Amino acid sequence: MAEPPARPRTPSRDRGGAPLPRAALGRVMLTLLLIVIGLALTLTVGLDRRDGDGDATAAAGDQRRPLPHAGLPSRAVAAPPDRPRASDEAQLQAWAGEVSAATGVPARALAAYGRAEMWLRGERPGCGLSWATLAAIAGVESEHGSVGGRRIGADGKLTEPIVGASLDGSAGARRVADTDGGRLDGDREWDRTIGPMRLLPRTWQRWGGRAIRDGAQADPQNIDDAALAAARFLCADRRDLATPRGWWDAVLAYHDSVGYARDVYRAEEVYAAATR
Image (spheres, helix red, strand yellow):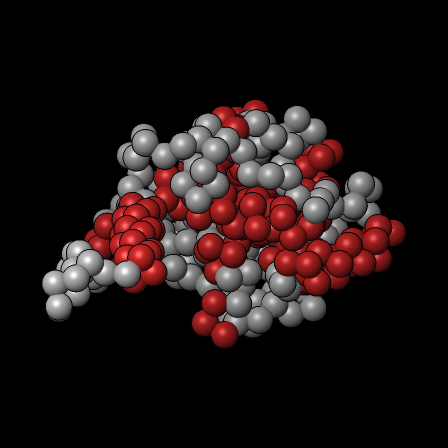
C-alpha cells in the first residue's frame, strides 16, 4: 500500500512573522483540498478492489460489484431471429462480423455464441439466454478459445485442445472423481475441464450435441458444439436468464463463485454497451 502523503505544515505566517498574503493562503487551502480528495480516492479504490464473495455492503446498482440476484446485466443486441438452418448461415455470419467489429470478440466465436442463442429459442423458449452470457463466460474461461496461442479454425475446432488441471482437491480445486474413463480429458482418476467453454466431462455427456447438423460427431473442443452444450446447461432446471435470479443461478451453477459471476457480469455489460 502506498505511503500517505506527508502532512503539510500549516503556514499561517511567513518566516518574517507577518501574515501570509491572501493569494498564498488560497494556494495553501487548495493544496489541502487536493490532498483530501486524493486520500478519498485512494480509499475508494482500495475498497473497490476487495471483491470478497460475502460482501453485503455493495450497492445493488453498482455495476462493478453487483450483488447476487440483485441485478441483471444489460441486454446485448439479439442474435438473428431465425432458427439456425443452413439457409440462415449467411445472416449469422454477417451478424457476427458486425458484433465483432463492435466488441473485439472474434467473429468465428461470435457465430457459435449467436447460433447457440438461436437454438435455445426453440429448445427452451422461456430461458431468455443471450449470446453475451456465453461470450462473457468463454472470455473468462479461455479468452474465446485463444488461450495459450490457440486459434479457432474455420470448422470451429481449436488448433490445440484445452484440458484443465486435475480436479483432485489440491490448490483449492474441487474434488471431482473421473466420470468419463479418461475418454474426454485423458485422466482416468479425476475429471478435468475441457474445451473453450471449460465444461466438465459429465456436463458434456449430458448436454453435448452437434450445433451444425452436418452429420459429424459432436466435439467439446469445437466452439460451436461447446457453446451449445454450455447454453443447454445454463438453461437447465427451467431457469430464466432474463431475470436476475435466473441469471445468477445459472452462472453460479456453471462456477460456484460470486467473484467469478461478477467477472462474467462485468464482461456481459461491456458487450451490451458496445452493441447498443
